[in-house]
Length: 474
Ligand SMILES: *Cc1c(COP(=O)(O)O)cnc(C)c1O
Image 1 (cartoon, protein in one colour):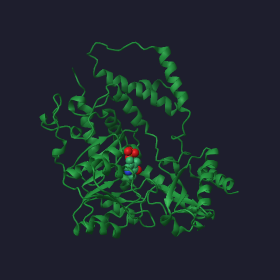
Image 2: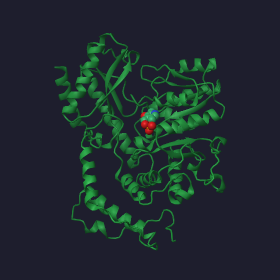
Image 3: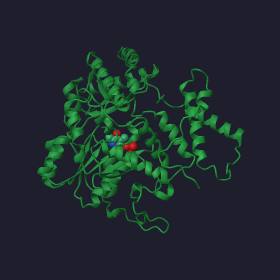
Image 4: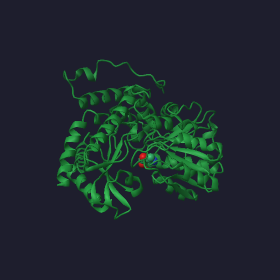
C-alpha cells in the first residue's frame, strides 16, 4: 500500500471551501475544511477496496439528537462568560485533527499501532520539552495529569527515592493519592501568604531525612500560585532529593511576556528538575485525554520492562517513545491533534499562542484591580498566572462564606459562571476579610481567565459581576 510520507499535506485546492457562500461562518468553514481533510486522508488508502459499512441513518440521527439534547444540561464551558473551573475549549484545529485521526483510530502504545501518529507524538513532545530548555529527554503523552504524575513518582521510587514525598499544602490532591498507591509517606508543606511552598518548612523536612522527593507546583489549581522553584533547586546544594515539577496547568506560561519577575524566575528554573508534567488538555487547547510527562534523563529505566508475547518495544532499533509508558493503549488521535495545533500555533514567545496566554493573564490582573477597588471584596495577592481568588468581606468567616456562595448563585443567574474554593485562614488573614474567625477556612470566589477572549470580554464580565455582588450583598 502507498503511504503518504510524514508531514506532507495536499496543497489546498479550490474545493469545499471555495464552494461556500461569500462570508461563511466559522462553523461552515470548519466543516468544509474537515471534509477536504477527510478526502485527503482517504486518498492515502485509495487502493483498498471500499470497506465502508451502511449507516442506519434514522436511528443514528435519533441517537445524535438525543445526545445533543442531553448536553444542554451543561454550563457553557465554551463561552467567555464561563470562568469557573479550568476548562478551556479545544482549538478548532485540535478538534478537527482529532476527528480526522479517528478515521484510523491509531493506538500509540507502539509503532505497530500507528507509525505516523507515533512519530507525530515524538515531534509534539519534543516541542513541549523545549519549553523547559530540554533537548535530550524522554517523554510521552498520557491520559492526563493524574497518571502523568503517578508515572513520574513511580520512576522516582524506582530510582531508589523511597523515604517520602513532599509537596505544598496547596498542591493538587492527585499527589497524595499517588504516594498512597506507591506505598510512600506523603508530607504536605506549609505555604506562605501567597499560597507558595514555604522553603524553611521544606528544608526542615529535608534535613530530618523524611523527604527525598520534592514536588514543586508551577501554578496551583486553586489560586495559580507558583512555588519558588529557583530557591528549591538551590536547596540541592545542601540536600539530595529528586525534583518533580507539577506544571499540569501552568506549564506553558514561560511563553507569556507579562509574568512578574519572581514568577519568571521560577519558570526559568524548571529545566533543573528531574521530571516535569505539563498537560495540553489544561492550557494547550486540546480535548481531554492529553497529559504529558517529561524526564530529563533520556535513558529508559528498567521499571518499564515487561514480558508480552505479542509486543516487545525493545525489538525496535529506536523504540517509540510511548512504548515505555505506564499506560498501554493511548490515543494516537490525541497526538495528531496536538501536533496539528503546534503546527498552527508554534510555542514561541510573541506567537499567537503566547499572546493568548498573556491576554488571559492581563484580564486576570484587570479583574484583580477591579476587585481591589471594591470595598465589599478582599482579593488575595495579585495573580501570578490567570486565576483570581477573592473573599467577600463580612463580620464573620461563616458570613463571608455564605456571601461568596450567594455571589456565585447571583452571577449564574446572569449567565456568568464562577467557582468556589475553600482556603485556610492563614492564606486569607493578611487581607483581613473578616473581623471574627468563627471557622478555620473561608469559602472564596475563584475565576479562571484562561481563554484569550477573556481580554475583550472583560468589561461585559465586570458588568455582570457587579450586578451579582450588588444583589448578593443587598
Ligand atoms: C489539573 C491538575 C492536575 C491533575 O491533572 P488531571 O489532568 O486533572 O488528572 C495536577 N496538578 C495540577 C496543578 C492541576 O491543575
